[in-house]
Image (tube, rainbow over all chains, first blue to last red):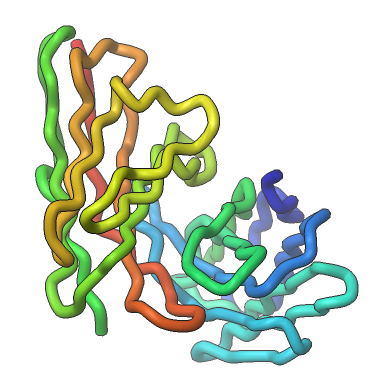
Length: 110
Length: 116
C-alpha cells in the first residue's frame, strides 16, 4: 500500500519554510526522500532509519517518527532550486525495495 | 557518488515493435536493480525487481511476458517491452543501490517511450 503524502502541492516565496509529511499504515524500517524535477529522474536526498533520527541536507532536513510510521521533510529558507516534486519512499524491511508516495509538488517563487 | 546510466533517453516507434531499455551501474556492482513506470504527474510505480543471475520478481498486475527483464551481469539490467502498443507509452526509470544495509537508490535518467 502506497504511503500518503501531504500536502499534494505547496507554493512558497523564496526564503519561506514548508513541511511535507509522509504517512504509512505499515510498520516501516526506513524512509527515503527524493526530489524530482520536471522531465528528470529523481535525485536522492536522505534516508531515515527507525529510531527517530533526524537528518539534514543543506537546509533540508527530515525526521522519522517510528511509532506513528510518519516522516516529515522540512524545507527551511527555501531557495528557487528547491522547486520540484518530492517523493517519500518507504521500506518495510532492510533492503532496497521501496514503495513511493504520491508526491508533493513544490514551487518556490522569487 | 554512484552513477546509474540508462539508455536510450527517448524512443518513438510504431505499434507492435519491441523496445529494449538498458540500465547500467557505472561505478558499483548491483545484484538488484529496480524498474519503475511513471505516468505524467504521477508517482513512481514499481514494476519489477531485477535480480542478477535469476528471474525477476514482478509486482502484481505487471505482465511478465510483456515486460521482459534480464539481469545478466552485476552492472547491467535490461527491460524489453514486447509488441508495444500506445498504452505502453510512459516514462520508464531504473534504479540501483549498493549492497548492504539501507542504501539509497540511484536512478537512471529515464526513458521516455512513445508508441504511435
